[in-house]
Amino acid sequence: MVLVLDLDQTLIHSTTKERYLRTPQELLQNNLKDSLFRLSQPWEMIMVKLRPSVHTFLKEASTMFEIYMCTMSTRSYALQVAELLDPESVYFKSIITREDLLETSEKNLGLVLREERMVLIIDDTISVWSEHELNLIHIKKYHYFDSDHDWSVVSLSALGTDEGGTTGKLTTVLQQLKLIHRLFFNPKFEGGLQDRDVRDILDRLSVLQGCTLSFKNIFPSDFRPENSRLWLMAEELGAKVSMDNLINTITHVVTWFATAEEFQEAEREKIILVHPKWLRACYIASERVSEKKYLIKPKDSS
Image: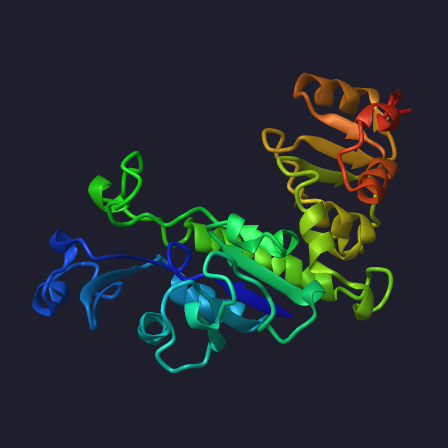
């Protein structure tokens, strides 16, 4: 599989504002010395801030994908930043820049040597991928420095903070990439690899977003539920799946039956008891089907 990464405001943020252009000596004394760099271009100086966890992101993503950079910036600038992100030149298979693009306001996959069904894109701007929006994972813009164009955006530096290393946007997206990769190559899905398409997986990942499912009375005690077709369908539909049965996090319990006591508890905690056929119906329809037809009725424990 291939991963196409935008550069500015996705992996880094840069500025030419004079007040940010510290000397190398000042940077060495700064607590951001490992993520804040000054680059020299023929016509200006640029301060570059790496997005938190970007090195971890690239390292782990490179074990699953061939990585391309695609940016509307110039080649000289992109190559300088690439040295900061990938000093040993092991992550980026290719760097596509403004000079390579046919349109200055549009990106495309023409220079990515792989079938589009196997390509994922991560970019903070949706509009530049009008021909490939179905391949796109949209990431929130990284605003470390004050903006030159949008004064309504309060920068992270102005707030004296930054994205968290373990809770930042790149960490979140990395978890999504791991899930997509696992689903794409999972042998339990019907059809061969030639039938898999990341666009189908991305489309389904929003179907049950916000739902947390628990399975009860479904699997034998000696069976690993995460290997089941039901579990995989729930993940592909974007639901979180839990086996710890923490009441305050569960939205749905997927089960064949429920006792009167279980039904009362679910009603009290506003948990929906639903038949496994509901998951299948959502998967086939690629949308959240109403639970009404699939609700479990109370059954006496005897």
